[in-house]
Image (cartoon, rainbow, N blue to C red; front, side, top):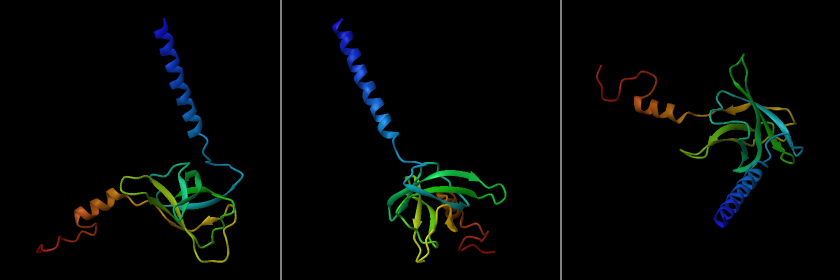
Length: 156
């Protein structure tokens, strides 16, 4: 009987730790917080990006992606990000999809411009660069390019 009680207590402790971890992991600031303002950007590709993905400036998290939808007219990914209050971005800033490394995840990176005017809540960042497909780049490299040129040293 005492063995069953010990097993039940051990199981309850494991369950309590798991629930505590889930509560801790779920308390992140993703969207709708009063300490942020929205900005818009349209990307050709947001591969590897989803709602909740980090937005970084100089490697420091300053916000998160709050919405992604496809524009059926332009076929661009319309993205909304939330940027922390107190961070005033120049209106000529660039925004791009970056990778943490060859095997790391993607995130949104903001590169500030030099303008004295700043982006207001709801403004759109016009200078965008979408995700670069590593597989596509490797295929172009392995295939000798996409322009149909003959490999070097080949005679025609």
